[in-house]
Every structure is written in C-alpha cells, then in structure tokens.
Image (tube, rainbow, N blue to C red; front, side, top):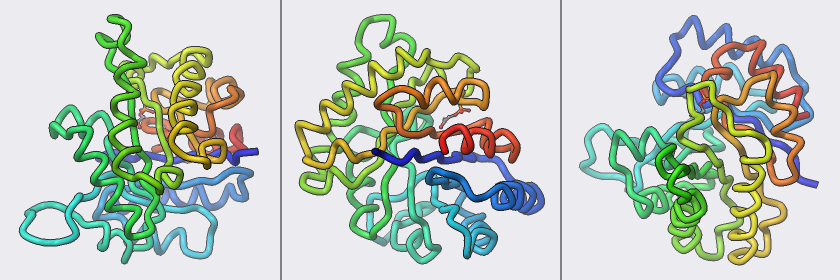
Length: 246
Ligand code: PGA
C-alpha cells in the first residue's frame, strides 16, 4: 500500500510573519497519517528548516539549477538545497515550463541533479486546455515523463511524479476524479515499463485540490497525494487536505 504525500507549493507567496503562522498551524495539527511537505521560496528555506526541525513535516524548494555550480547568475544549485535540509524539489512545474521556456530535457536534467544530491524531485507533467481539447493529453504527458525516465535510467523509481493539468491550476476548475485517475493510470503504466518500483511510486494530483474535493480525488486507485497551491497558504485548508490523505 502506498502512503499518500501532500506537498504545499507556496509559489511566490509568503513573508516572515505569514510563514511563521502557517508553519505553526501545520505543525500544531500533527500527526498526520500521510507524508507532508512544504515547498517554499528559496529565501525562506532556512526559517522553514528551523520551524519544522524535530517534526515529521518535510520541506523543499520549487526549482533548482541543472548545473552543480558556476557562473549562472540567479540560479540555485541542488548542493545548496541539500545544505538547507531539503527533502524535495519541484521540477518542471507548468509555470516554469511556460514562463521560463523550460524544455522536457532541462526538466529531466534538473531531476537527475536533484537525485545526485539525495533530494527527491517532484516532476510535474500536464497538458494545457488546448492540448486536452485536441485529444493530445496522453501524448503530452507521456512525452514529458519519457524524457525524465530516460535521463534518470535505473534511478527513475526514485522520483515523485505530479500530474497537474494546466487548465486546473489556480483556476478552481478541478479535474474530475475519473479524468485524473485515467491519466494517473497511464503514467503508472509508463513507469511500470521503465522501473520495477512503479507500484511503490507516489503519483500526486495537482490543480485546484481543496478540502472539499480532496477525498474523492485521493480515493482513486493511482492518486497517491496532492501538490497543493492556493489551499496550501491557509493552515486550516492545508491541514484538512492532509487529514483527508491520512
Ligand atoms: P493550485 O496550484 O492548487 O492553486 O491549483 C497547484 C500547483 O500549481 O501546484
């Protein structure tokens, strides 16, 4: 039986005061019956590490460089993330693919760099509304995942995958449990062909997951948790989703 994983993706939100309140609200509600993590903006990694030390709530970042070090102004290496105790790093979020023109191969290289430092990459895949309407969902997510599978090779079983339909992110338009499960099953089958560990891998759903729809999404056979944006910014909502996953 796979344990669910709930990850808060704070995106570019937060402040010292807001973070302290949010993290206190999450830790006070423990224990959860699932794995829980928050992926915070880089400048707040240190305070997240302090606030979460000694708890079983994990933390991570929302992106990383594919390079180990060097003249890459503005980038942050996985070595640095590891010094801050990051357990996870999100790679290939659709906002990075869209606004920063990240290619499937760059996403794969970032995932590989993360694993090399012992950080679990949360690899996001997902189709746009136009792609879904054109019947391209399967081809798009397979292509995105395939680049990562090939690059990680025998380590492919160590990543977490997140299916995030772009049309459901921040829009309030959630995929139905059946729509999400259909894609998760495809992804699981693709992973099975690549690694003997596929049945143990966590495949998260992301896109307007909230306390009121979490239960039905998480009830699906191949949905093993959530990558939560908006609802991760309010402790009561995030805690409610963690409880639904427990
Ligand atoms: P949302 O974001 O929950 O606000 O839709 C999810 C994500 O982008 O990871």
